[in-house]
Image (cartoon, rainbow, N blue to C red):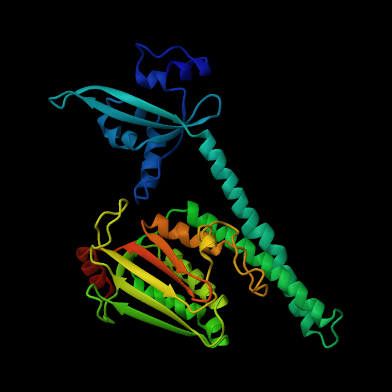
Length: 363
């Protein structure tokens, strides 16, 4: 605390009221907790500043315990929180003001947002324009450019566009707040299979989904409920299925198995909570064991030499790992050359009370 005020060239804080000591700070905003009342809290804070800095004002205690963002005279951003100190009888004996410099964090957030803007607009826009011009050229009765050249331009533009989209998806999966809701893993798998079906159909690959209960018996009516971000989890399943289709020969089968583990999965991270597992197994070319350790790293692609026609930036499996991990789950791979690949996602199951409430709200 002394070093902080010395840096600002301010008098030392001993013996002075907290409101006076911290009054030179400028309020930026309240801390977003995701609640509906955040906008109201922000308006209240700005209307009552700097009265909020008086810890004896009980009407502001909850807001200051949650924290506010402030800016000092040197334009550095801080997170300011109050904590109440009590004795054994529960009587207030004082307060602690925590002031954390978050300037570097905000700078990193701005850089990330700038990068996302660059990728989502500045890089995507010219590629989309190139593809539009290719379509216009194709529609001419007498095209100026050779058809082979048009196809090459289209392929390169599509590859750049896919790379930008994959970058944006991964960045959002790593940094954005997830919108969690009760969802059926069975429904997510059906949605993902529907999206991948055209590519599978083109190679005459069969997509099959199997569901089992905790006893291992078929349970077609079980939804295998989880709490997840529907869009991101569906995209993760689509990425796995897309890889299964791309790295499988024609006239093969991809099997998607859903299972409730019923509390038997015990790990140091997750304990013995009920889990829902999803295994996507293909009959494809397989991945050598020595390459599996880097499977979820960025820009890692496989079969580039044997299958140069298969495109991709190598970001799809990094996206899968990020999404599953942020949902409190695990993802494992079992594979061998010539014997196919099986990806298994394990996620915390929704408890029975939440499942009943969700089913009631959907009926």
